[in-house]
Image 1: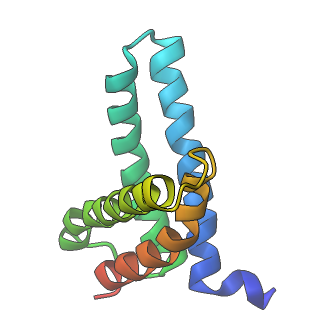
Image 2: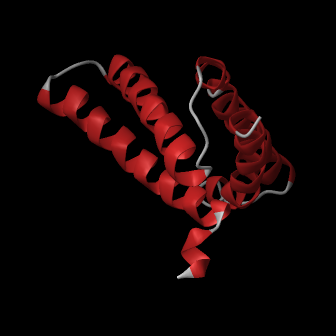
Length: 124
């Protein structure tokens, strides 16, 4: 099972788990606790980001977690959000790609970029 043992594959798996974690907490806060969608989203995002940090240090990159790495980790999400937003704008407004397809097309570019940025932060 060597193909499951490379960092990029583990990064994609963690991304899938992180998306599931986010959504689980979002649904818990929004539907079960009756919170407004925005606080539900923000708290679910923050919780999933903390879980993602630990999954990435222990599972994806197999490095020691440090406070410095933990504090730098949100930068990876800022890069992801910035690049994906720019790409979606380019795909929809400049290339006239369907707005439903544009986010999926952006993922093709953002996953490798986020992988590189996350690797740089967590492996230093």
